[in-house]
Length: 320
Ligand code: HEM
Ligand SMILES: *[C@@H]1O[C@H](CO)[C@@H](O)[C@H](O)[C@H]1NC(C)=O
Ligand SMILES: *[C@@H]1O[C@H](CO)[C@@H](O)[C@H](O)[C@H]1NC(C)=O
Ligand SMILES: *[C@@H]1O[C@H](CO)[C@@H](O)[C@H](O)[C@H]1NC(C)=O
Ligand SMILES: *[C@@H]1O[C@H](CO)[C@@H](O)[C@H](O)[C@H]1NC(C)=O
Ligand SMILES: *[C@@H]1O[C@H](CO)[C@@H](O)[C@H](O)[C@H]1NC(C)=O
Ligand SMILES: *[C@@H]1O[C@H](CO)[C@@H](O)[C@H](O)[C@H]1NC(C)=O
Picture 1: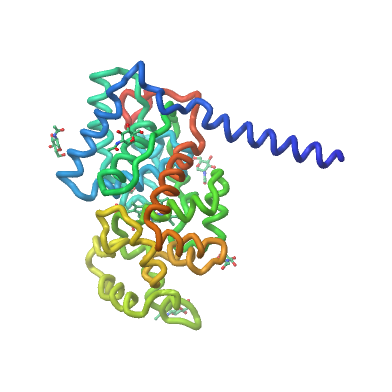
Picture 2: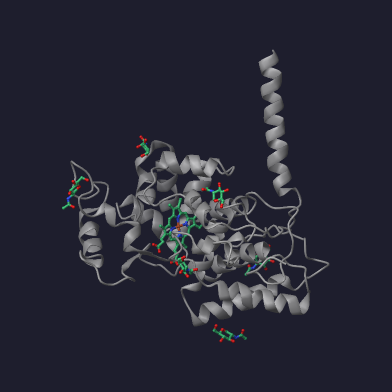
């Protein structure tokens, strides 16, 4: 009885804690204080995408990175200072870029509605915009996040590694209140973008004591990847697109995983684990299903560890 009471109390406290983290978020948050905020951000993101087609992938990954480290608090945007090495200078930062797009949006927002729209909300809105601009689903973005004041390079170790298996991924996501379904849907973000060789090269040669290459890889794809990442490799920019239609947001990522053409161990392991395989197969068959679940999961990702007692930065790169 005592156990029952305390465990349901714990569950209650947990539920309160989780819902509180999203309690202040609201789709209408800026309706009175900055009604043009989303339009300003959309125009900046759209213009930047026309000039640089890598922008959508960069911004989508930036949102994931931000929310997984210290919650969605724009800690990923802070620059290092003489006394602090920031997240953006931590190890897996090769594809962190396009910060200038957020800066442009912030500059325009500060002109229209000073000290109102947080940098964390700008990332969340821009992440929705890049998906929409790439042909993906639309959703209403919850807003009202505050910006954090801390960003530490050493904390990027808490991002899931591309060598992770599904058990490790499920654990990493569940630590942030995200489910296995969120994991599979959000991994569909790899329908956009590119990876450098370092993130998947270990699968290609001398993989294990029994297999020279990862046996879950399609053999033809293994050969292709070896060609892209020769040994020795003098091209620092060498790598592979994560999807055959890497600037179109579609469900091709899942079809490739089903065909043994997931670029990372983390992608391919979703097919190998009974807990996630059925979802990969369902998303591969049904793009509409994927779009709906992706949109829902992005809203959940955007509610991870929301900061309530932070500030609205004037410049996204420095604390006020
Ligand atoms: C499930 C765990 C995940 C792992 C292990 C992972 C890992 C990676 C790695 C290693 C790269 C390539 C970095 C490089 O070498 O350049 C990458 C790229 C990317 N990731 Fe993920 N990721 C995960 C989840 C996500 C999520 C949830 C999203 C967004 C919803 C996302 C969006 C992207 C995008 C768009 C790129 C391409 C970036 C570019 O082309 O600039 N990833 N990811
Ligand atoms: C559009 O983007 C380009 C490239 O970043 C930039 O030079 C230009 O000033 C932008 N135009 C507007 C209207 O924001
Ligand atoms: C990544 O980190 C390195 C080393 O700290 C740094 O020199 C580089 O500017 C960082 N890249 C980005 C995009 O911030
Ligand atoms: C996307 O959804 C938002 C919020 O529901 C809506 O205001 C906007 O018009 C939609 N955009 C498009 C292009 O459908
Ligand atoms: C990062 O470094 C800070 C001190 O600079 C330390 O307090 C913290 O525990 C470290 N975090 C991780 C994940 O190593
Ligand atoms: C996942 O990886 C961890 C760490 O390498 C390992 O202990 C575990 O057995 C793996 N799980 C599965 C299902 O392969
Ligand atoms: C392959 O891996 C084994 C075990 O990690 C190592 O002893 C060996 O030197 C590696 N061979 C090559 C060619 O890198």
